[in-house]
Image 1 (cartoon, rainbow, N blue to C red):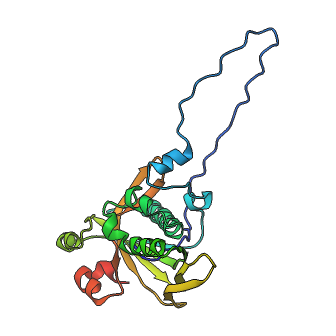
Image 2 (image 1 turned 45 degrees about the vertical axis):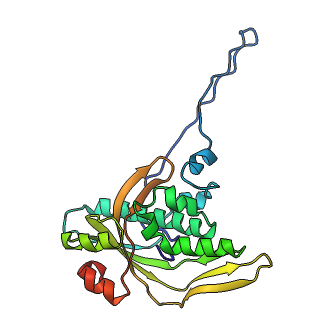
Image 3 (image 1 turned 60 degrees about the vertical axis):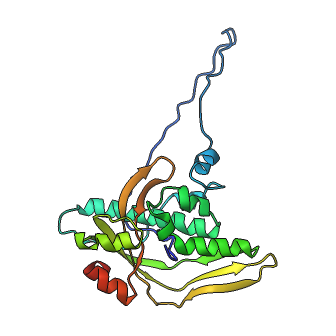
Length: 246
């Protein structure tokens, strides 16, 4: 998965309401009651189970609302409401991906459940994280901006292409319309930045993410990234046809 954005989407979001009831203080003459024993798993333990070494900030774990156009081109196979929910899941996954790259959380990308084919989907992230770590540097990433998410059905004829790329074929995919500016830099201990990847303002590098909408107790609702095709290349446009077109 290449540089992604932490942008968020204009959607009707469900708001969670919780109320806490205060317990009445016992009378002074009442016998003391033993404190209840509650088996809980700390947030850090939960994220460690996903391969992460830290808990992502709340801003990463919660996708708020802004303007990203969602287009449903499944011709009625998927409802518009589901398409919007799936699009929000994709933005949620993108937010985790950006965080993992900036924080060099390759263990999370490998084992966190964001992809069924992490070695192929996150090949770019693994390359930069491992190269920066070997050089004693860290990463600073400014992701691209997502403008439009187009949900499309994937033809059966593309199954062999997915297998050849060691990716997982799924019946639906999002065409992701993204533009720069974006930048990825290696930063040494003195703060010196070496830019490795830069995309100028207004330049687009669209991608195709086949996958599935899933709920995870730690991640929340995400779009499982089963593929990552660069739709700006002639090969992808030729092999994937309309699925990789604007």
